[in-house]
Length: 214
Image 1: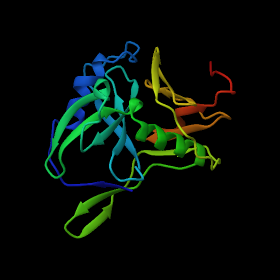
Image 2: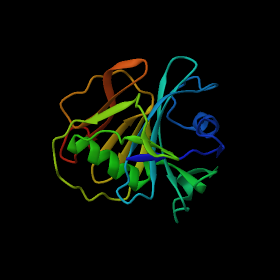
Image 3: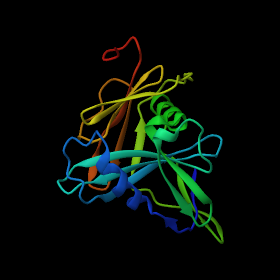
Image 4: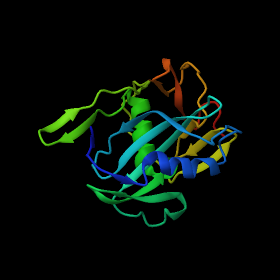
């Protein structure tokens, strides 16, 4: 489960996204002069150290962007190139925000959810009376049903127009400009959010012997 603490964030998540996203190579010409938050989904870090959250953003011209972030309590040595910014969290202190596509914790969580048929983490609000389950509006589900645990390699990230390919021993294919495509036969993550009631593909996994892996 994910826990949301009552806090002030400086900058806010939307502010940091509005600053960082317009400079990314995977936009495909989308008008990102203004971004709105459509939803987000989280995964669990088994060690409880890293916050994993993928944001779904709306653009002025009606596109949907997918932006995975990870939040850490300390900088990662050697990961300076994927550091987006630092933010001040009034409860947790300084947080280092990374591009999730380069973060092994995010990649492991995403692949695990896809292959095992998992779903998003439940979000709980920390209150004076304990943890309170927050109603979710964005839901994702992996196709499963494998129980295999993969040993991932160091991520190699590349961009093909509006798609990000991440090679980690398997290939993750992540549409950054999300198109309403229904899940096919291969391992995939599908999701819904406000305004998108029919599940559409948010990520796929291709194994080295499978189609499209070269």
